[in-house]
Image (cartoon, rainbow, N blue to C red; front, side, top):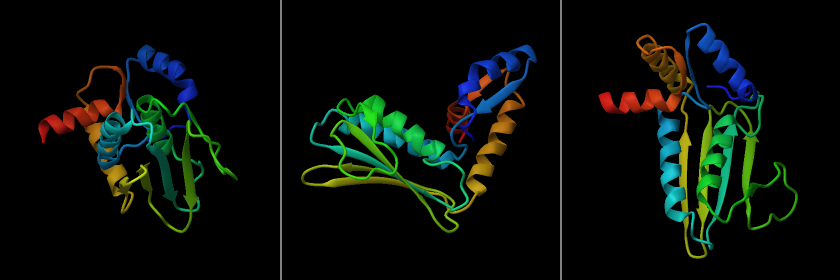
Length: 173
């Protein structure tokens, strides 16, 4: 998965249609990360209307990663902002000082050889809930890409989201 081209999605969709091709896209092709997205959606639905809850995203990757925050962290922010009524925007990355209560903060760490860790925290006055996904290696991403390629082999022409592949994988296993 890669996200640096989404501003050209309409152009690419038209090209895929013109060539009668089939393409799967997504912020992340890991099955585990995509299930994590669904857990975060559910948590956002459960906690999102509680005004006394604060949410954050923390992600860590190897020091050579080009983007910060990662496309996966950006997708997590989209999920939470769509479900948490009192969060209306993102705090600036590299913040120096307090944030307003309507901002969602994302922190990006670049160090060593971390394959990828994403944490969503839900902070309340009396407790905390933390959801986290840790990639142990790049193999999970490769596995998802192979499953997407196999899925595309029988799919009709079109532009698909990785969620379409995941739904099929879950229905079969």
